[in-house]
Length: 292
Image 1 (tube, one colour):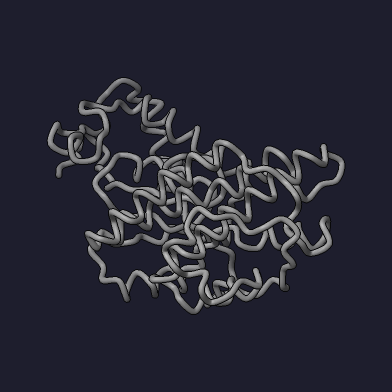
Image 2 (spheres, helix red, strand yellow):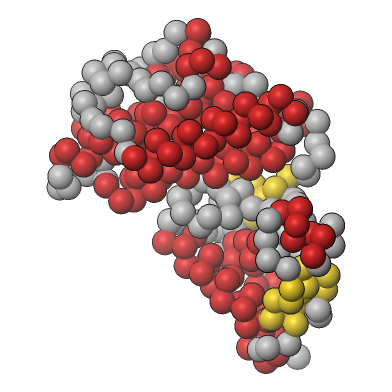
């Protein structure tokens, strides 16, 4: 009789016992589709991956009462994320990549996928007089934005919405990464770095505002009001342009209304930041195949 009380605990117990036995196998055709490595993944290797995710999510405050959206595609990372979140008592909101646009909009709004909209606005009001600080754009953020904008244009042309949402949620993590690294809300840290970080956060926020508008227009319009931007901001040619330094901001509003009063997020497969999306399919406790 096992003492394990969660799926994660049962998996860990089995992984410590079976070690190098095969847990799942990624077939070559699946690897080609997703650009991942083909071959067998052992229990030990999977446990190591799960533990890295668990530590990363725990360090960012994930725990009981949180909900996380995972995009269901055929990748082992779904298993890693699911076990790690289960270890922390987090509830998973599975997202079907074959859903229609209207259904995806419903999930984004009602699963409370928090794209870190609130933190930059709160920090600007508490530390910078309610204005976008005079800062420089972070180089990494600039590169990430160039890539996601190119991806956005291609995906919208092909109506590849589920995969695009995965990429957008992955991009949104940069806001929390900037807060983690540079602490723009904490005046004990260097002011110049804090200004640069918060300026970059608003650059990301404006990009997210435009890209998510087709999916959750009401939510993005509330964010637009908080940012005090004109309705013309939703034009595609506004992508990649910053909110000017000194721009006065409005007050924070509820962007993703809670249906159950509990916090939630969407997680990606990067492990950085509090907003992300995972993809994959769970394998059984033996040497299951992840087939295409």
